[in-house]
Length: 84
Image 1 (tube, one colour):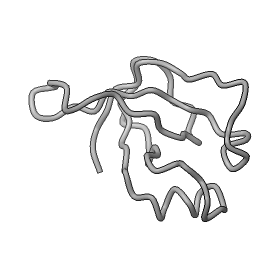
Image 2: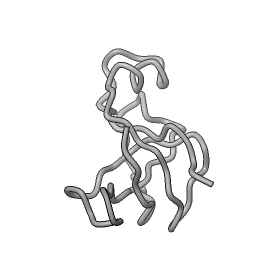
Image 3: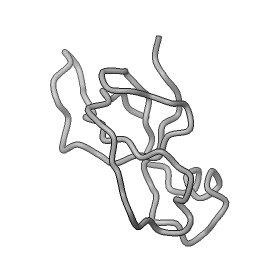
Image 4: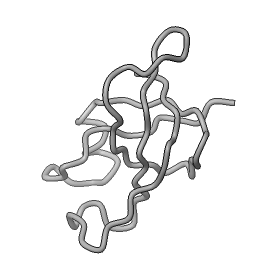
């Protein structure tokens, strides 16, 4: 689990079938002091996060597979929740 800032949305004309209907966000994970921690990540989101929001993300692929309801999804990163 890690905190990240939403830096944009991804738009795709063609998606893997398991991602149909899912919102894709581009987020920048950050560590202590708010400094970037690695490259930006593409995550699936069901909470409606928007640019500038702080979100909790996870790279737990098993949970992502359960969220989309398919074992063959390419999704790994997902939003766990929005931070107030």
